[in-house]
Image 1 (cartoon, rainbow, N blue to C red):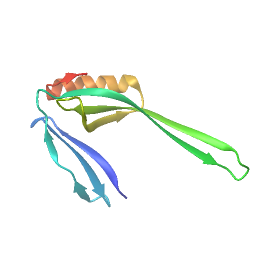
Image 2 (cartoon, rainbow, N blue to C red):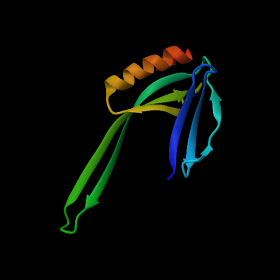
Image 3 (cartoon, rainbow, N blue to C red):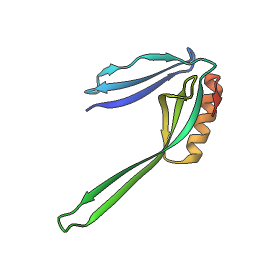
Length: 105
């Protein structure tokens, strides 16, 4: 019942990463996007391993790409967007960079 959401306010140039408890209670703070901040793409791979009763293993990998907002000293602040393909994430980072007025890494 708990999930996470990222809100991007282009008109006020701010972003919010919130945790939604039970789907109705939103917890998170707005972060103002400053011109010194940057955005970049990071590849993410999550892997699960399952064992069956016959002692066989099954490995499942979930690969995706995320766009992160980076601060002054290149530390990750907020994940902004997630996609399965590199083409989709590259088109989205172009839009976000243009709309928020910040550079790409």
